[in-house]
Image (cartoon, rainbow, N blue to C red; front, side):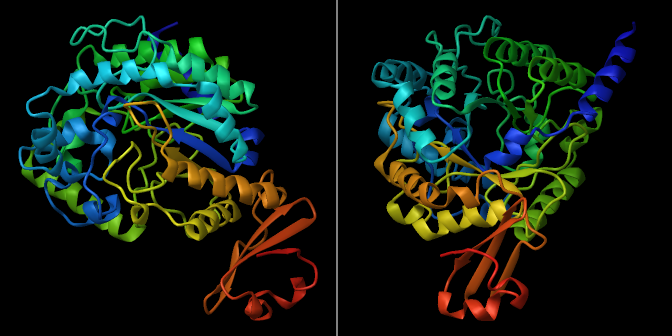
Length: 445
């Protein structure tokens, strides 16, 4: 059978895959960004990613609020990260943070993490196994010709997978397929730099070998790629088909946009301006990041934003507790999501048929979850312990929401049962609820 025929057959298998019930029932997952960048743990505060992209600044991403982008921000001499790094670490190279991160594993207790995550009601955990800096959190057998041994000798991925499953949750892996700075360190200032930063040459086969290794070793329930896939669809389809063969009830996200030869046009000024203008307009309209739909995916992943209503395609809102995914020591309590906002966000997302994939960013120097983040996990624990029956395993009702003044209602349903969550002035509930359901729906304040 020809390679083209195999790719076509694989594509049919991938397109036929459906989202499993376990994921639709889950409603809450935990994301973990914990990389060498967690050691310096710094990014500028005060501006959300959507505001930054909407600004039209050609070097916006040099000012990224995401601390896991620390190495990229260092490539811009006058960025806040570069100034912080010079004053704190002098000329120390980024790669040295990996050894500090590894040393801190002496303090790491994966079972304790899993217990804390399970207490929130989360049904799955997705670990960043390789971010844009290319560092691997497992002892990969795939050689890196550009930086040998750029990985952890301790099997962090495997240990966390075991702990998460023992706590009754599903385990997933994040992999940065589109960006790896060991293979291409093109500075990313604007969105139009991303196509130019995607490694080519031998990198697509390297990425494929690592994803296949992750799938075979850890059998993840979620395969979460980021940015894009560095090769055409014919290269990707067999990888995803093999994943589904290994994990028939697995889930693939929507960030496998396949590389195209047309991406070289991003080197031209006209195309760059067009890309950046479109991204700026989209960030302003969507109040966050909504990835373009690729050819192959199961679920959508809007970032730091939510859809306005129920979607036909399953989706999850991806966000940090502050404006960063990785640990940012510059963030104060005021930079973190407030209790009411966090809990109402979960309710709003579930009412619209989505999941919340909430990020935890542990410290790099001691492998601990900061208190300010643990408080938010505790808020979720308290809330889902009382009201989880109206969240987990539900589906959207015939309407997602009602509102009157500053009082809002969100609905969920399970079979013939309908639940209403209220936010705002409960005394105005009769002004909000449709008359036909005022007496029939249990209301959760």
